[in-house]
Amino acid sequence: MSDLLRSWKPAPPGYKHVVSVSLGGSKRNAREEIEVLGQPFVLERIGTDGDAKKAAQLFSELDGRVDAFGLGGADLYVLANGRRYTFRNIQKLVSYAKKTPVLDGSGLKNTLEREAIAQLDPVLHWQTQRVLMVSAVDRFGMAEALAAAGADVVYGDLIFGLNLDLPIRNMTTLRRAARVILPPLTNLPQDWFYPTGDKQDTSVQGKGTRYYSWADVIAGDTLFVKRYAPQDLSGKTILTQTITEADRQWMSDRGVARLITTTPRMGSRNFATNVLEAFFVTLSGKREALTPEEYLRYIQEVDFKPEINELN
Image (cartoon, rainbow, N blue to C red; front, side, top):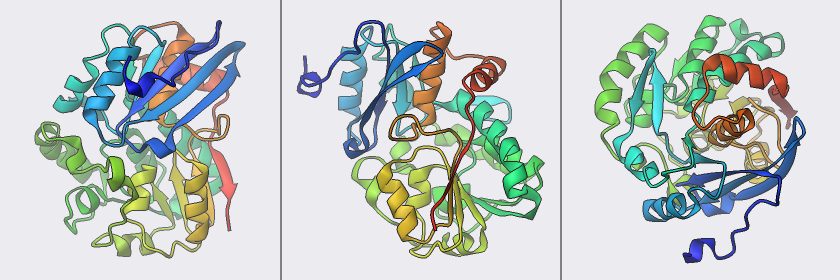
């Protein structure tokens, strides 16, 4: 066994064990024991600080020893316009898992986050909100739901992903951009446009700052939101998913008024969609991604709802 796993502990007897192998930072690691619908679970995240070789080693050495893997810090698939785009280098990485299914959260994003937008409308009244969605192609379900709910949205994929001051303001343009950008983009290493390892703690100020000022709500991936945010976020609402206590403090320090996560806290944190997708697949007894209808059924069965936190 490698040094990575010398201190690793399997789940107790009778527990289901979900492990998220992440290219993100190890300081965000977590391990929680929960019980859902009478079934005890261990939900665990192991970060590799951007080291793809360590991630491959974890997939290989834990293969068959846990019930499901999550893939964190990267997307295996992006679902947009009804099509699934595959990141080639990530596909190679997860191929080290031969027996245990690997879920990256893309299927759950496309269902759970649509549902969350609808559930939040009585609180936020989307038709009155200006929303900056820092990246939409990896959360197409949320992007479409915000547009359908009547929010005034700026999709920041070109601004923050490609450093071009070209805001996308409607779904027609976003769909066209996805068709053009995603095929070549999925052939590039994902860390070209998504921070891994130490880059996750680096703040980048540039073309996008004024869109943060314009928006009432900043939506999207937590690390993307933090990476491009200005110091002053007074009065803003942040809509995201993966949150640690350090993230909550970061937001509070910058004056964020309200933090909304698309899922409730489980133990001491809100886990990423890859962990939750692996959790739902394990709960179902299947060994592959579920259908949208199945995800929605389990979301309702376990009563997953957005969590609203007033910070300032």
